[in-house]
Length: 450
Image (cartoon, rainbow, N blue to C red; front, side):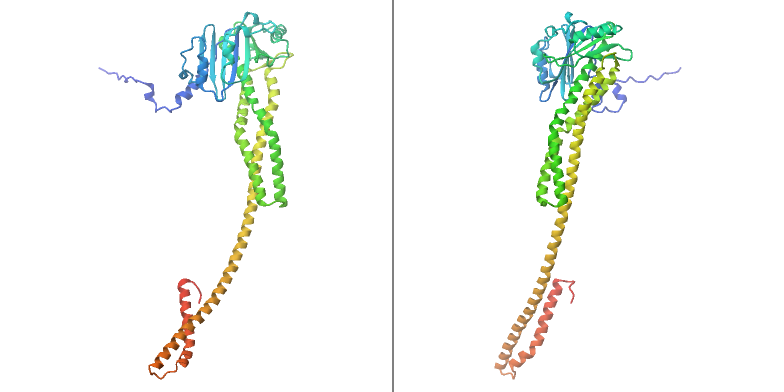
């Protein structure tokens, strides 16, 4: 009889692996955090992107609660930076990013806005109230009405003419999207009096809802990232005069350094002020310049994802954006490089001035040491003179004591001449005083020469 070993059931797959990194699930689910909308044609997408600096999730949640049936919405539902609300006949999508928040309303296309309509009025057909749109927390950076309609892509001239009529007979940019040419994207990129841009997507009626959703997302993100990238341009223009003034000031400082036309302290004060100005500008604007580079990269990526092909007689949307965006991005990049270069030049100038000050300080220290050396020599001479006088004075007092002692002995009856005895003792006293002082010097200065 044989027996079969059955492995014990595993209660959790996690037990088969080492403990999870704290961020593992968040990072893993990031790829699913913002699913693409499914859009069935014909449809209207009302899109608003607002800068969220100083705007909290609580404020945004409070605004979303004003939608019908959303009074119970909690801020915990907004923790994932994405929320799609399905309402009666339309959906509202909320997405929070680092610098901006996006609101997308997908609703049915009004009957008066089909392909071929002449610049249709879309505002009366909005699924949300104008007050709700107007009171979205934040400052508007992008607002787009994207109409997605069905049309015959084979009849290029007729379809393009209808698209131009729909946009108001303005000069348009148009692209065939995808390798198979599954749809068209048409826009004039004009800001209308109502504050919205308009885009038109023309596709066959049988286009899948998922593909339509991806097309709308790429077009809306393309325009949003273009505008976010351009936010660095006003900063670059604002910094231009300051950079020119600072460069001229730095050139003056270098000329003064070369010609020794100003005091070091004066140059140092001017250079410190200039360095503070440059570093302040760097601290205030380095993020904006870095963000511009990042957003420009996203614009290029979205253009690539569209896989555009030209429609005869029109410019593609990607070419239009790149031709007008590239000079602005180049200006921002040049300003960022100019600011970084100025900071480096200020640092080099500071090093040069510091070297000059160090050399001057060393010269002053050398002169001070020479003065101290001369002072010590004078002090030694004075000390030797004082020592000589001290030996004479000590010897005088010792001889005086010996004289008094001799006189005392003579008074006691000893046959002694005090004056002669004291005079005879003078050389011995001088020698003893000199020897004693030398011994004291040896004790105080062990290495001193005899």
